[in-house]
Image (cartoon, rainbow, N blue to C red; front, side, top):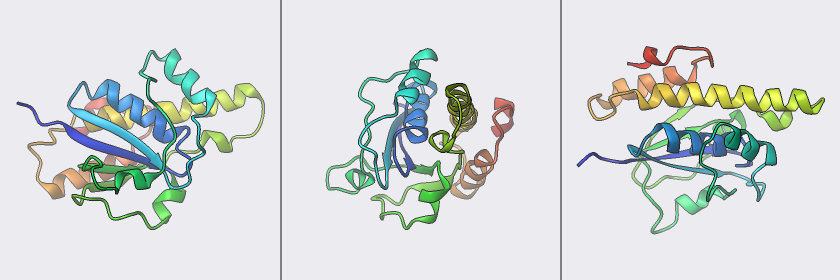
Length: 173
């Protein structure tokens, strides 16, 4: 039986980037990974452009909702194998102590909600965040997680955090 890894994506508002990452990993992880997302100060709802972006890419949106990261520290919460911060603000905050001491990495992505301008400019920002996350998640799922020692896996996860959206997926292995 193949092990399923639990992965948590963190962002401040949990309404765009971390939600996109959750959906992307659910899709590209093909059952090898179980994805979750949360925020340090959740907005309480998923941004409509996030849902629109995911639906246009034909990615799962059922069950996606904005939630507080403390849900994943409570008794009975799934124990995480990996925790990724996708915004610089959360990376700078003191994070809770995650049960199970998961491996962590920072995959900072520009906040599309911080983009001002026309609707087209905001959509481009959402698309850029989506592409950056998709590239990193494809690189991550291509790793032989069960075959790498902890140090090598941590190094690969950190390298992925520096990957550009146009990086070839094969470069992770």
